[in-house]
Image 1 (cartoon, helix red, strand yellow):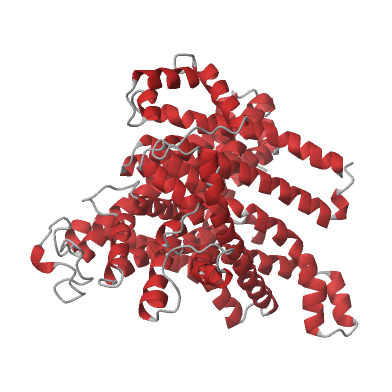
Image 2 (cartoon, chains in turn yellow, purple; image 1 turned 90 degrees about the vertical axis):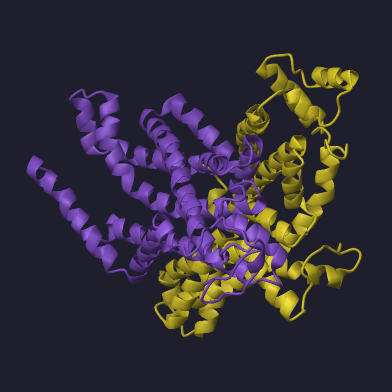
Length: 315
Length: 288
């Protein structure tokens, strides 16, 4: 078991190195002198010389990359050009906000997606199934920033039920924090719920046609017990891993959701950085997102092994 | 299989695919939706009732009326006419960025799957690394570094979607490579390039077509997202995403400014998704 986990970790290393290379190469796309971009408004020759030295700008590409990587590995992602705050600090400040949003979205998506999937599998071919599929396809097709705008118009402006924007930390006022995040997390959850519904449905359908379900039915168990205790438990396996794998989707969705609801999180950080040409922040955010995604993949792999004992002993 | 039978079989399979596609109601609805939007985009100058860039101080934020079918925006421009011209940006972005992804991704996938070995290892590692960066975040970063414009947004979205096609094509090529007809082509000494283009490529095409259709939907949403963030189509040229970007400042005063562009994105993306699902069912050889 430990050996498998370690091997997965080793496999992740070349991917991480390549990701860092891609993120570093991004700055090579910039037109003009990278020094002036790094310096921002600063034109003091001493500062320029320091930056030139620090980022090895006179050296060839691979030396520059290694110098950058060395800084990143020691936790130095550079400084925000606009505020001078270290990028690592900025990310550490914004990440909890997005994690709360993502976590609430996952909970909502599971609460909507799994029951809907079970229902449409059990009632396959009925109007319920058909309606669930239409709703799921709409969930995938609807641009979530538009859904956000519409919800604000109806729920906040018309009905004045929930706040339209902003963020309250849960440590400050837990209930208010949940209230402000409810609408954004629902918006973020729609696509996720749709995927979960579709996968739950197909997993349930294949489980429901298996022999042990027929046996359970033949024993005279109540249909509800068969579905919930026997079928769902087995169908849930692929769904657990799918949820971890959709993490990347969630992060990307958070960028737009946070923009619509003006939530000061990870996604808003990258958008604001793009507009202030704060490239070190953009690179830091992209790198963090990728590392997070690779980590979640690892978690998915390990979860899969934990859930499915047959994978525990490789041949 | 005799030469004659081999020549007839694909045509019969094609006929069956077409029949199956047209008997699928949601696939036809999806196809029609896409077709209508293509027509509206192409015929924008014909269907438009106003100049999409014509501003007017006397018609600022008018509600929908017989004169302005879908209302006017914050500069007095006709929302309906802007929607039609915006369709051009969206459809073009969808098609061009997916074309970029296909042109780059499919050859790499074919070569990786066919040759295997270190070529495959190298291509696969880079693909994995690109897939590790969430699609939209990669697109935003690329668009940010390339500079904000519609064509850069298309390049950014196309490059971000490329690994999807590399991985898919590689997997398909790997499966097709061991088929008898490829072995046969090798045995008679055909050059590799000819085997790839003449025997492998046509046989990996169906799943790629399905994926391309669905990726157009993703690309349209991505372009709208980039334009919404201000990284795509630049004003005053209309695009659905940039229309929503300004509309969000007038949510309570002029809701029509947000409702229609968003609805258009939703419909066209739904159309491409339905079409993709329908093509997948129709092209699936297992049901035949």
